[in-house]
Length: 487
Length: 95
Image (tube, rainbow over all chains, first blue to last red; front, side, top):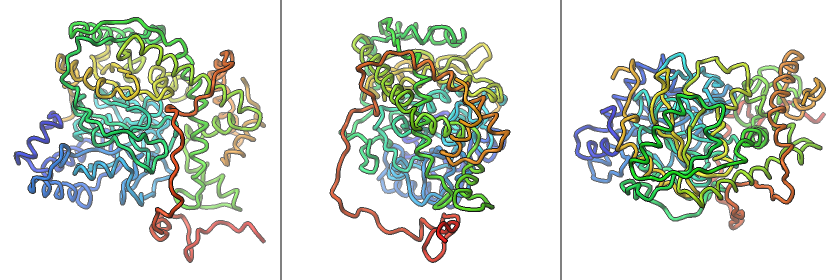
């Protein structure tokens, strides 16, 4: 049951072999047992929320009104506002914030009859690559409790890997779905920018933020994306496109597939064990009929510096709303209005968030705008153009998701720059607004999972999911589960 | 690039973040490291390149100028730090 795909779970629910209440209770019991060690869920609300939704799902199932995800327990990243749920974004600033409305993503899952199992831990305001910036303490990697799960969607990745939920949601601004998916040995996809509405998703860097599903296999991701994607007038960057069925191409053969391998993704800085697993995956794709094309993304080396101008600039603007007036934390003592702002923000935000607000404030300040922000936006176009050129020669681009397997808790804590470089292969995809995914492709020398990154052209999600699904039919890396999680 | 304490204090003021002297010193060294990373950008020739502000070059959607939201003052003020008589309370700014 815990290793079943969403398709299998849906069939069993519709055949009344198990009820949604039973399935939800199994997961809630596992959360009760394993969460004290993993710290992956910030909030669960068994009776009032999750089981009430499960009972409603069982009623839909009984009436024959079920959709593919009806009755399936899904963990929601704590960045999505869910009405009546505490929604903290991993921050002291929002520790007591009860969301007064539902994010579009939450509405979509509710309409589909899915069960919200609880809110997952994350780096504070999604700023981090290890989950260590969460005000509520780090999540642990279920494969090695002394290692990080990645970030910022580390709670979501851990919950899926440890079988504490059937599937989860994440968000990805610079790699926050793909990197934790890689480090925890699960599958995750960040769709094309504008595919999933950002309404009710707490903003970090609005021109880069994009939500997506995290699950154990590509077929599950396709079913989840069918629910999450869709036009929403409340997000001004939501794309007005016809509804797609992301499962439509899953079973296509890969005989005509051209895979681009960017030389920049296999250069110095990549761990040998990660490179070995990625090359083994490429060899498997050749067996499935794909051809390999050598490509170059010459400006991708600039993606980290560009990102650390643009994302903090947008963050400093977005996070100016936290002033201790309408919601969120207010300092207990202050002398006047300015002092109230400064103390509330200083006490409510953690170190990494403050660091990024300061970078952003500086690069947007008078006299520096052209040298930093404008220059970064110009290079962003060069980076995007590299991908456009590459996709003339290939259908998908492949490489490592992360330069190494999961690192130890505290290992990169003192050096922000080292932490930033752990997203070196994922950031360019956000800057270009392209879809990217990570699927498990083996294990490193320390026995920890390795992720294969698959990058597609704009709106190529169905093809990417097909590419991932065919690999998962031929291999079993995605079926492997960590020990010590009571399976 | 190396920032001075005065630079950091100015940034903290603009960002409305209270900082102690010790925090300013730490921030100065960490921010300088990050700006060294960012400095790699400066050498790139971007003459004639149009800035890219968004991934999809689509124009802003417009809608009719009509009210689309209901008044939810009580719900929204229920999560505010301090309210009175339907108003958000802040320290006095006008004598």
